[in-house]
Length: 91
Image (spheres, helix red, strand yellow):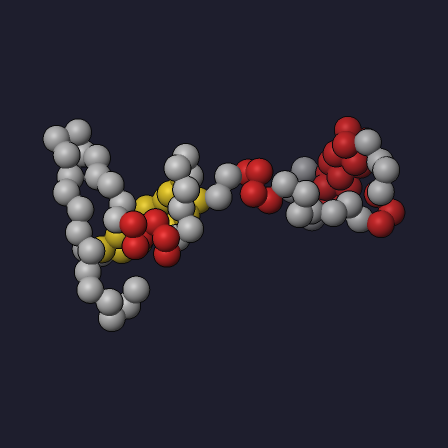
């Protein structure tokens, strides 16, 4: 939106506001979506905060782990982490 006319909204007595439609469209926001705020000096950056389900299924099992039960994979990962930590003197 750089170079475009600024949009405005009003803060209510409860500290609420409505995001202007141009902002909602630019961030692809829908009702119920979450947003995050980052303070940068005297400005605030608003970002779409996707939920956990947005990344569901994006992680694939390693080829040698396909079909392994989650509990078993977690146990094996923990054992490997503990072995590595012991080698580095962290455990």
